[in-house]
Amino acid sequence: MPSHSGAVEWIDKAIALVKPHAKRVCLRGDTDFSLTGTFDRWSEQVDFVFGMDARSGLIKRAGELPEGAWEELNRKPKYQTAKKTLRQEKILLKSEIKMISALVKPLR
Picture 1: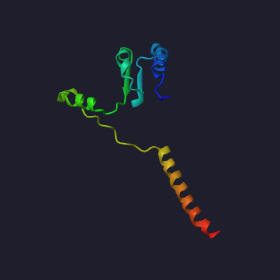
Picture 2: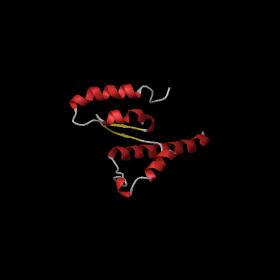
Picture 3: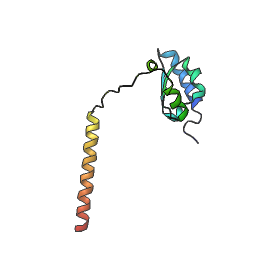
Picture 4: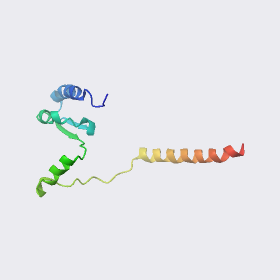
């Protein structure tokens, strides 16, 4: 069963649950959740950002847009968090332990 199976119904339920209590609702999802048949209906209620596969028809349509119809997305530079640093240290330590274990085993 595909991961997006039944997603429209669940997303509709989520919108109905959250909408009365939020100024703005934004849905996000990957390409599996780009359920284009519901975009028009959802756009009347919420904002959404879904990934799209770069298929030939979409690439053609994008190429036909006038110059002022789009702008390049400038992403913020990646940043390093304390958690990420700690994770990197754990990975390095784990690698060192494996290397030491590999050296010690032949000596046994």
